[in-house]
Image 1 (cartoon, helix red, strand yellow):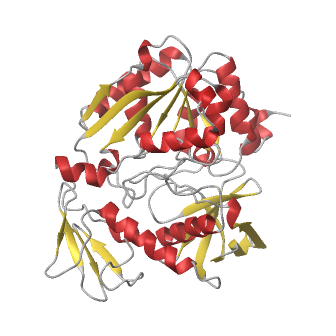
Image 2 (cartoon, one colour):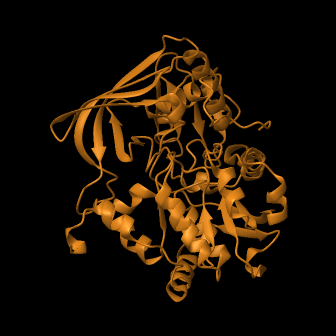
Length: 425
């Protein structure tokens, strides 16, 4: 059968990943260095330099922004790595070609993926190095989330040296609540995390605890200290109410609005302005947390209390997006709208009931199997996998971040494996 007759998934899974072509990888890396490193004010510090290590290794990083491939790959030149990226990104026309050229490995995020592990093993067997972002998704709130389930077992299995970077300021340059970019200042600190001998003595759980602690960074608290300015053009709060949906004064969780450099509650008037260094200044007699990350943490505590009720449910009407069987997504789309329905989240997990391609579709995912979701672009949509199939949800109302927190805290409350950090942040 001609390869042209195969659907996208079969074409993707027929690939046998090799190490990237060194000349092309390094050539593109140099171009990205010229185009982006000065533009975004990137400063790199090497505590231990993996470029001086002649052996194989794995490189991991916190996932601060959608441009982290630049802030990790460029400082590591001339080293060559196979990056690991979201499976669904290979269906986007502006990414598929470069991903194939640079031998990027597709991974279905937040779900077991045998193909990804086989291809990572293949690259390592061929003498290559792997670079990945173990959180599985770039930051939503300017600080880390715990690494994905299985990260410790992954590191333990390969027993290679592990280097890492902490990207500071990446989120402030590319905040998740908008698709705008705000150049300013980014620091990348590179160091060594594990030797093979250290890995041998640690359990997978201990490895994950160490990774979580060493990768952790809070951009808002960091910049409250250093006060670097970002070119927000008066739009520092654009879309912010999609992330900070809860009012810290009246505790309404459906009344926040934002525009330009301001965020406010439409019920009680509580609000703040956000300057070019992301400092919050309360309006009048408003009650506002010290940083946006503090606000987000308080919001999570509010959701924790909500879901303790065994009868708790949350429903939303959504459009359903799926990946094309043939052809690629164009115009920066992340899926094609092929259906609609209702999602309901309860203490049991997630249920979708609706249609797909004009046919009835209903499925459920138990909370223990659903630690969180993926998010391709901004806080307007989210995705998950069910029986290996990609489903993206576009809610009619601005409730995506609330859905994330509800799902995560139900998973944790029910004893799911993806628990919160064990250390004091």
